[in-house]
Length: 515
Figure 1 (cartoon, rainbow, N blue to C red):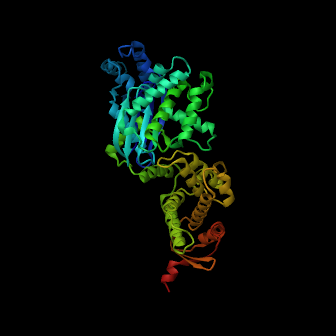
Figure 2 (tube, helix red, strand yellow):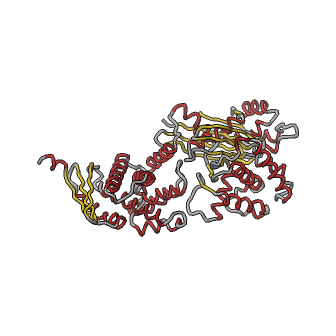
Figure 3 (cartoon, rainbow, N blue to C red):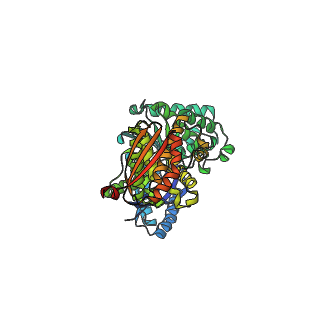
């Protein structure tokens, strides 16, 4: 079953059309994303009435989006309006006119709904079990607090990036006096919510301003992998970026890599919101989620028809299934890889060669399932493609650091190749962690060789230790000519990693049972 949904997000700063395609085996993916900068908030007059120019801009955007929606043949269209329309005194006129003139039914979200949809997207796309979320729009800012993925509190502040710019910046650059007034205002607003204080959890930020802050920081530090979803920043990173943005002139901001041209005038006040919220929460980190309001709207509908992932592991497994689907991973062979690798690991721990660790076991399973998925592109350079794909693809449920570890294990070819791939990440991992990754990679590669004929015939193994040697007995349902050749060829990587010799003894189960 395929489901295509079009979401029209009518915000205070931008109006955006996003089209999603959902298949149970493939998951939800964005297939179209088109926006226009309308700044509807600025077309509210002194009485908070959206004027005729604002209505015309909205109408033209909706008519243009209708053409794209019709081209895709989509029946499921959800138009959601946030602060600018919600705060307009003529909101019912807006809704009725747009229905009559464009055919689009606009649903004006309540403050609670807007906050809830952002929270819903975050818990289904990130590994953070408890957090404060923040979504800065043009005319409002939504914050929530959730524990173990259960929503506890939510609130919508009646200010956003556009309104803060209007209220606290007379020119193109914030003056020192304006900056001080903005900080006092934000502190007062955030302090008014008792439940925000000293939560000591990460902040997960949603929306265009947060995305721009993450992108700018990545450019500043020459970040070595692609993607900003689940990008993690420490407090000092956030403050350094904010200090730079508030000090830059309009001309300098227009040249800044990572900053959208339509946000040059509003990025400084938005960035200050993140910094002040971080202090109030006494946060443990700042993470960007590219999944927000629009994804939350679609997810709510999908949850009525499908079992939605909630746990940390289930979020990752949904993304894992998407990877498997996209790169034609044979599920049976992948599961055999996981089974062989975990059994090898279990036996090596039992004889005292390795020390059992739940985190290592999890890495083994993930790396084994995705091992050499780059074969899909080119078998001769499978290792390189595997590392690049996993390292640079957005994978829900894991932070970038963990993604690189999986990429290293799933692409393992040799120690030298491992260190070549990991060269841009030398400051991400300790020497001990690198050695663990090497051992796990060599283990997964050896397990891969034990299925040389791709028939999944090795179904049992035994390992015993004899002095500095490991005696591996491998039981198979059939002749093992391919497995013996590949295992004999590849065991050297595991021998070097473990600093032990390995003796292989293949036995046919049929031959044993006939004795």
